[in-house]
Length: 151
Image (tube, rainbow, N blue to C red; front, side, top):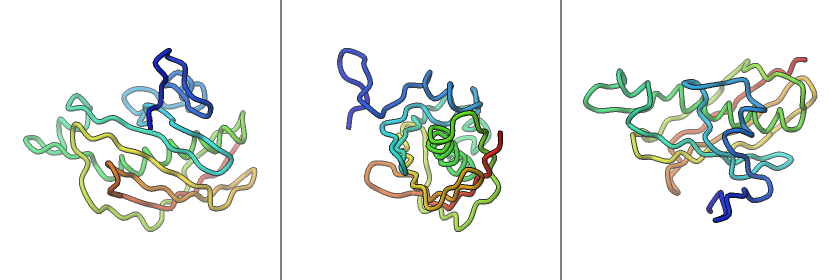
């Protein structure tokens, strides 16, 4: 799925980096969502492109760069934040729990992470999401994430 037409206009439901920064408070080097491919009522699909210049590759691990698993979960949480804050504008989403996180493979420079997050339960104050990270068609990480939404 291509996320941008040749004329530079994003398809319906997609978001550019600028759009994402209007929703999330995160900024470089901690913004871990590069593009949103689709956002719906209960689901978001986003991407994070990994390059060797990512700050965390310098020390994790020198000579064999691997994205820290905790940052893969953070990327899922940020994608989930886009979903929840699109539904509840004006709120801030704070991460309160991560459950059942599983890491099946590593993510390395050159990978494009596809972040798929589904709302399992959400109200105006609490949301439970399930997220998975894919490289190609292979799931490399998944977790359940809980947010509290505050004014």
